[in-house]
Length: 278
Image 1 (cartoon, rainbow, N blue to C red):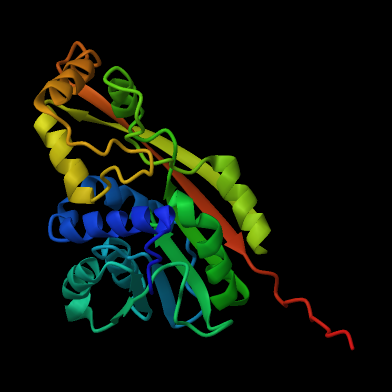
Image 2 (cartoon, rainbow, N blue to C red):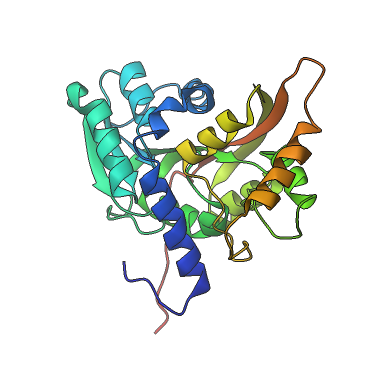
């Protein structure tokens, strides 16, 4: 993919993937975040109707490993745009012999039309590429095929966003997806029987350093267009720490919210026939 040098959105995306690449080898320790999501998604799959499942945006391989463990006769194609992440996913699933790594972006899939029956995605389709990614998913899924995904939702990191608002008026948190937005995008992409719901839980931190370390491990650092262009100085960072300390509970823990949207969509059993007008 050629990145347009004068495109701010492409520049932001390139920074996003650079951060994910740096986090590739620490990403696997984030099981407390990924494993509940993987288990929730797998519980919603009766059994894949085909021999191949696409794990879209497989990151370090959490979803792929869950699929391989749960469905012993299924092969998984792990699609990931960050090569370092894909290498980790490949190494994690190498022994199974049923994992195929595929370097590609969610909105540019090198897969044939109508070629798969099930696409699954766990926390990797971003807000800014939602419509394009769903359009590609719709293209590669066969008639009657299914799409199952989990998206990071707007209730995630609200405590961190609130703390930053006490420091400056810049954007520091990704614009995560909303429930209605995901539902509408599925319908717009051509999926029927669409269902979307959400789950919210909190992770409690005793030490702020652990929180910041986890954010770096996920690779989800701020790459917004309106992000602050100067380095975060010690004074500003100390103000952030002080603001976060205000949310520390009576048990001495700082709660951080995580919200996930679970979405399901199915394509009609047959696609409408398009006639060319002479």
